[in-house]
Amino acid sequence: MKNSCYVIGASSQIGSWLVPELVKDDWKIHLISRGIREKLDYGVNAVWHKVDLMDPASKLPPDQANVLFYTYVIQLLPSLLEGFRQRGVTRVIAFSSTSRFTKVSSDDLGDMDTAKTLEAAELAVIETCERLGMQWTIFRPTMIYAGKHGDRNVLDIARIISRFGFFPIFGNARGLRQPVHAADLATASMLSCENAATFNKSYNLGGGEVLSYKAMVERIFSAMGRKPRFVKTPIWLFELAVFFATKHPRFSHITTSMAKRMQYDMTFPFDDAARDFGYQPRKFSPQLSPPGR
Image 1 (cartoon, rainbow, N blue to C red):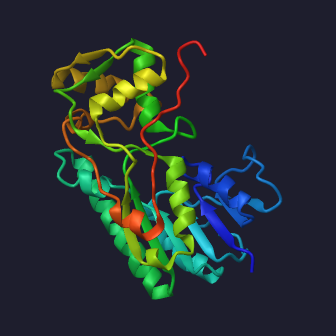
Image 2 (cartoon, one colour):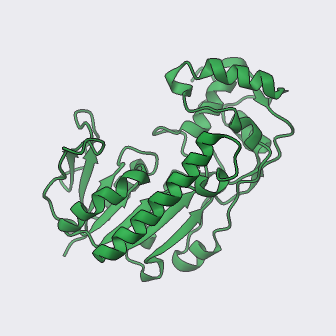
């Protein structure tokens, strides 16, 4: 039987790299989206289905498939699993986040709630999959980047640089980072799909290079064709800037805790992923156009 799958989050950073790989590998693909009018045409083997997962009254398509690739909000997944099991899905590959660990000790209540919510969602996914006889794998990426497809992490920094010509930092910004390219996460999904060594396991997936927060931003400056310029900012001024920035929907997710996290290490070894399915992520190399292009 030809491999068949559902993909939820096909337009996400990860999904936008994953779907072309599935098409290349001749999968039969069912793509779930709230709106399909302007979605990409991936060919006859990829069918878009309009489903609003946030609406309890919205129904999944009746089509049968054996794998579910889930790159959307993991908190919604437990309630969907039974429906997918009824449609033949026996293999689930889902994405969570290392924020489950990095935000658990934050002094920001929103961050702490995010960590608790992610942990609860992962446990619910595992419990439900095991009850339904579904083989699961959960990936927790570090900071995802791609330079496109909704890349909020790198593009937010690039927008600040483009707007002001410098980047504000709090303290020495020496906290370690391990950005991971979305394409490498898509590859991880493909490599692990039929690999029994990955069944019923969770993996933290970082990128192939560890660098300080400041060095990471310097790399973004270089990708934009600009000389790095930093301005050390006291926390009160950063809080004031965040207050005004969050008035714009594009920056509504920014919090003052982001400044403090510039000092914290957020790296995770991926030896188990390398051993189990040959995970080999690339070094941090953002692709951004210089000003005026």
